[in-house]
Image (cartoon, rainbow, N blue to C red):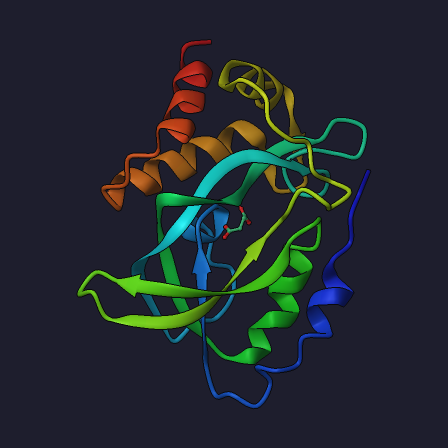
Length: 186
Ligand code: SIN
């Protein structure tokens, strides 16, 4: 089923008055910045883990054959590396549309590489959204991903680009890397 969270996110007007807002990206937002930004910096968040449990009906799959993309789950001991973008609130129109299939804006404390901190926003798809697919073994996830393609390209490319981007951040994400290994061994 397709979710549409765009109008829910656009109702969040509290940032409209600010000149700029930090956005934390942990998935395709790391490697595909198709929006204007003022600054881009590696950053991390604590207490969240990345998982390929969200369905993609609009980017890396179709309503008939949804792909799998990442979302975040709360895990007290986890640390998630990503990229922080300083954006103006104008960029939300594009971002809310891009992330419309189940993702909601969340406030999150971010830590930069020099250990300074800032509050940011991130897009997270929780278990209640209609496009959520849920947990599966990494092998099953990879098998599904291998078969899916959508308007933004193949689901395989999403994984390979994310894995490469994480390596360039020195991030070791065993979940992403295991799915990448299955895809590369086919
Ligand atoms: C993100 O990248 O931060 C959200 C998930 C995605 O668009 O892949």
